[in-house]
Image (cartoon, rainbow, N blue to C red; front, top):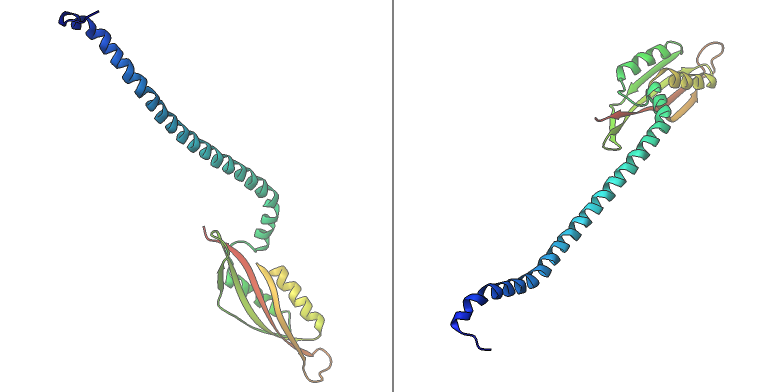
Amino acid sequence: MKLTKEDFPSLAWPLACFLGSVAFAVAAPMAAQKFLQKMVVEESGAEKALSVAGNRIREAKRDRDNLSSYQAAYRGLVKRGMVGDFQRLDLIEQLEKIGSSLFDMQYSISPRQKIPVSDSFELNVNRAVFQLSLLHEGRLLDFFDVLEAQTRGLPLIEGCGIERIGTSTGYEAHLKAVCTVSWVTLESLK
């Protein structure tokens, strides 16, 4: 069979379909490969987002459980004045009341030290040095019991030195004590 010029117009449509089919057969796998790569990247991103969301949910559940288990202890710390704003004026007023029950009490309070312990809290340390005249050693222990019961924060005894004063008798002071006590509190930064 021989092709002539008159045959070309009738072959144009089948030839165009053939060339289109070849082009589609070459382009379709390339497009499918790119689409598959895009889907793999999106799937990986979705899996990471799902993993992050799952971690956040687990962390939130753990925080909720921790919060409920520590809530009573936290309320106790707030009630004792360990957590919250520590007012030095309240401390001075309490010390004046306590001092009236002793023979002689003098004290000096150092400036407050602030120590950051986290992004949410800082540790406040208020240090006082006491000079006490006492009838006997038991009065010193009573003094520390009263300090703990009547002041806010956690009083920590850093050190104490005791010396005997002369040879007094009766209801005069027999001992002189110099003690350093620090009150520690946590204060919220937010």
